[in-house]
Amino acid sequence: MQTLNPYLIFDGNCAEAMTFYAKCLDADLQLSLYSSMPFAVADAEKDRILHARLSTGSILLMASDNRPGMPFSQGNNISINIQCENLEEIERLYAALLEGGTATMPLHDAFWGARFGMLIDRFGIPWMLNLLQTP
Image (cartoon, rainbow, N blue to C red; front, side):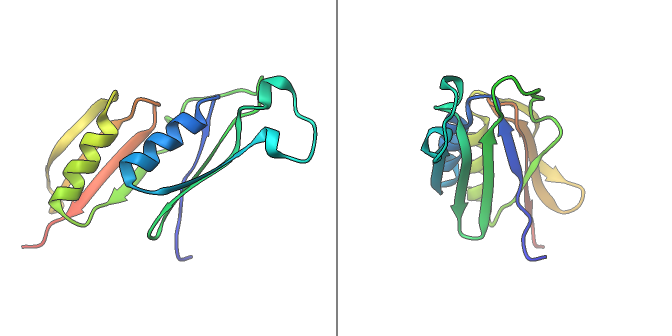
């Protein structure tokens, strides 16, 4: 396996969330609405996202909205880890994703030799940011 990417499910705010993430990560975003499909959809589904694809470099994040009326459990069962390249990047990403969210572990020097922090963004998605520091 070369890569692993998370797939997120939202309850009607997928476009808003993925647009926010694309801005934070300076990434390209493709959105497909249920209404763009070659079959009839209910009015409640027309503006929901059937599939979203966010990409930058080797990073790929995919998502969709759930179908109206389907059970939904906000994303506490998934975390997204970003392995950062430098101190500037980890600080910028942490601050950007934290906008409107909650810090669960501020950026700090972790015992495994990394700069590390955790947060839950304004959409309820948990993030972990890690920067391995060389001696």
